[in-house]
Image (cartoon, rainbow, N blue to C red; front, side, top):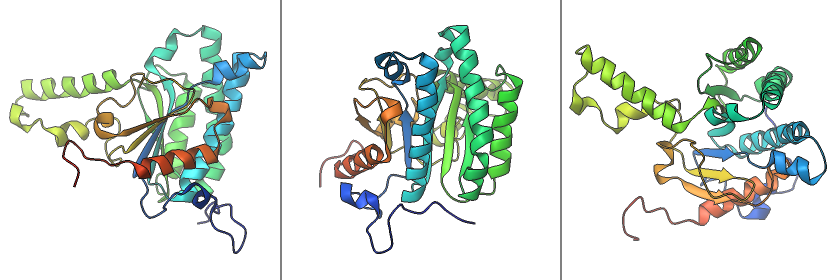
Length: 257
C-alpha cells in the first residue's frame, strides 16, 4: 500500500523539521475545531458557501500532514449538533459538500492507508450523506495508517448523555452495578471509543472556546489557538501547533519533576 511522501526532495529533511517538530515525540491524537470559513468568505465579498469550499482544501492539507508525520489519530469537527440552527440553505449546502467530498477523496484516502471514522448521530442526516459516510468507513476499515475521525452532527454533551442513559438502562435491567461505572467504562461508550487519549486540541479563527466538542476527552488535552482562518490553515500551521505542543510540560495534576 502506498503512502503520501513527506514532501521532501531526495536528500532534504522533512518539512516539519524546520519548525522544530520531533517526529519521535508526536501527540497520539490531535483534534481540530475548524473555525473561520464564514469570516474568510465575508472578507473577500464571497458567499459563505465559498468559505466552506475553501475549508475543504484545508482539511485535505491537514489530513495529509498528519498522515505524513505519522500521527495515529486526527479528529475534525465537521458539523456540530448546534449547526442545525444555521439557515436551511447553508445546512443543505454543507451536507451536499460533505457527501461530494467523501466520494471524491475516498480513493486517495484508501491509497494512503487512512482509516475513516465518523462520530455523531447519523439518523437525521440526508440519505446520500449517510451512504457516503458509511462507504468511507467500510472501504477504509482495514487501513493501518492515520485514523481520520470526522465529527458529524456531534455534540460533546449529547455524547456524554447517551453514555449516562446507557448506564441507567443497564442498571434498571440488572446488568450493571454503580461501582462498575468508572472512567474506562465511560470512555468505552463515547463516540471516540478505541481512539487514543486526546493530547492536543487546535482551534483556528482565534476563538478561545471548545464549542461542545469532545468535552470528556479534553480533560487533560493541551489547547492551541491561532487567528488563522480555517481556509488559510496550512500544513505549516499544523507543524507549528505540534512543535508548540512538544514544548509544553504536561503534569496531569502532579508537580514538576
